[in-house]
Image 1: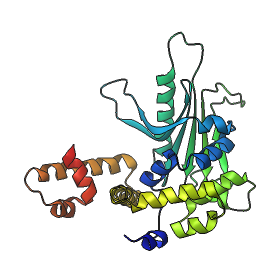
Image 2: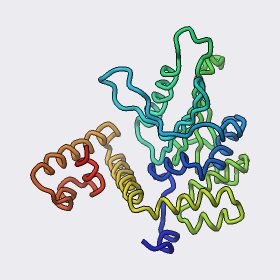
Image 3: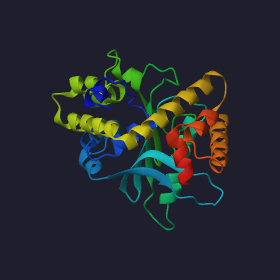
Image 4: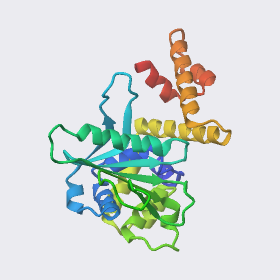
Length: 283
């Protein structure tokens, strides 16, 4: 694909693969650290020096399912920030995200350690599950009278649509970052951020990712998955069943690949993308 096609092609910045790659990248570190700093009230330099990684949490039991956050910011041995990209709403999305945060607390807790771990969960919500008019929602464990029981865990929801609505007063750095997430093309990003060197580093990284054929395949897989999940949601199939259906398709593809090597045929009968099928074959 030519560079001009990339610039004008419609993109989804909340695409799981794209958002993860961008938020973890060194090129976007300045803008991501600034955004998180304003959201959680932490010194930006601490966030600049933190480690930004994939959030796989070690299993404690053999039967546990794999737990992996979108972006995990490792501050030190007792403090972490998790960022979850919630492109669309599903029945269990917040339960799943919170369970990852709790798993991190358990993992960091050490016997006889006087330092207690803290986890802040930032949810980037491309929907308004709670039908709120507020741009940010913060959840902490409280009792009926409003007393906070513990500071181990806090969950912050960034309602993207409310952030860009000028009716609300929100920190300009938060608004700026959300505009990045809500943009629909490289061209739009370049127009919006052409005067900001730090943001243009992030925009150039996005362009670089989309120009990479290997990454573009991962991007397309996530777009197809998001479309399938939304279609299932609209037809009344919950997330658990949706995941089960996808796993079923993968099992069919795996069995088909034992007898044939025609990716197009396997794709036709399973509805999986060529990239997904190749991934199954390598496992």
